[in-house]
Image (cartoon, rainbow, N blue to C red; front, side, top):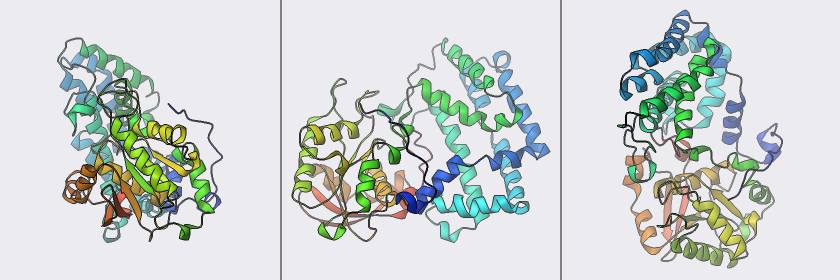
Length: 399
């Protein structure tokens, strides 16, 4: 499996590396000193909340005799969320720097609403805060409490939460998280760190797999795209949908092989300058193989496709997110917005994509693409939609 290489220097502007403004602003937000942390700690009510939260988790060893009690100590309560929401709304009203952060970075990320142009910045801030708090709680409920995820067969917890010894696992996580809470300010991140720790002990680091792709696996293709004469090609890229193996020790499925060969043929015929292979570490349950990585290997080693003509999405777990993540990559990397791309798979799978709009709305809340015509039995046109950037908060393995 491919490993992360050394990171390249951080670009000082979107233009320097030819990346989109959305991606650049999101990256700056990740690197930004915690303005929010500083603001909330100036609020006495929040300071008391954090102190009490740390104490409650510390006392869980004595107070809690069952799993649900422990789980509640790791999570945000509804009352705590309301206090934090009010505090940050006050900070928005009083602090110009914070308002600038919300306007220029948070809203520009397009990650929290498909109707962001109809929502005020303050409303957008509230939506983002409540959604992120819910996302932390959901990850803890699933990967600590054993709540069923949206797709239990592939995403469930690794532990038997009804086993009496499981309380010891929760105690171990509790003491580990508390060691990171040396300062009161750190308690603001207690549920987030708890969620990450539970994902980690479940071996569920999928959402961060091979990131940042822009500086590693996908860098060569991004650089190549900047000097490309797009007019030479009918389509921008071919998105290849993954097909997970049925056997645990099988790196790539027969379906995956056939889809790779279809993609190689389209590339060699000059239909597209780039192939995007999409598929995470999904099938079978807890497989060590990543569909996108194995498809890229096959394309390079067997089909002789140049590595810098291949982009990977190693995160998608469903057909809906194959399409969403592929759309995200096309927009992030500055591919022509008005030029159609192709999606390719088996005949039956493309039949599914043609009729998948309602499922996308049900699972994602929006449709992340606009479909064009069916080019062949296995190829379908699509245009990516800006809505694809919106986070799916109840899918912690691929939000």
